[in-house]
Image (cartoon, rainbow, N blue to C red; front, side, top):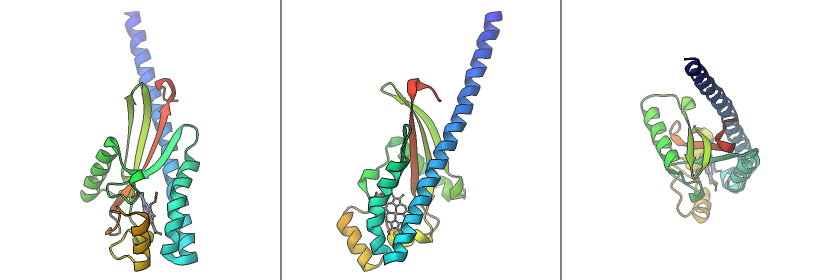
Length: 191
Ligand code: HEC
């Protein structure tokens, strides 16, 4: 009897500590996503003000992977993905694709874009990962390069740099993609 009580107590304790650690991981992941979003927008705005959207493409092309790399410290990996890609290097994997499709359905059903997020813990080949995604909606700043009407000079640079570009034709409020954040958990532990 006593050992059963101890076993139950241990189980409750470990379930509780996993929950607490998952909350901590989610806080860090959310913070990384918002930092990537804010830094990219700031860089875009400065570049557009300095030389228009055609000038800002180069900034985005170099700055996006660079900022993501800078934020990827302490085992965290930070990036962006989408169902309609500009850069094929940002392709979603299976879980990311399923999450993006679910975000689109939730958005169509009326959920505010700011609330759309998803997380999971995944193990494969002996590696356990915490994963997190947060939706990126289109706003007015994005239209010059992802909207329905795109200036000719912008179009020609995009065609040259991204011959397979599928990331145009968006309207404000639509889902552009998502931030995708992950961390390998050492020994499968959540701390
Ligand atoms: C000046 C042009 C420009 C503007 C404005 C712009 N983008 Fe982009 N966007 C790009 C370029 C160029 C890439 C490809 C970056 C790369 O090579 O990683 C890109 C890629 C992306 C990606 C990664 C997925 C993919 O298709 O490769 C997302 C997500 C994204 N943009 C969202 C946004 C959002 C949201 C806004 C508005 C806040 C925005 N962009 C504004 C040019 C722009």
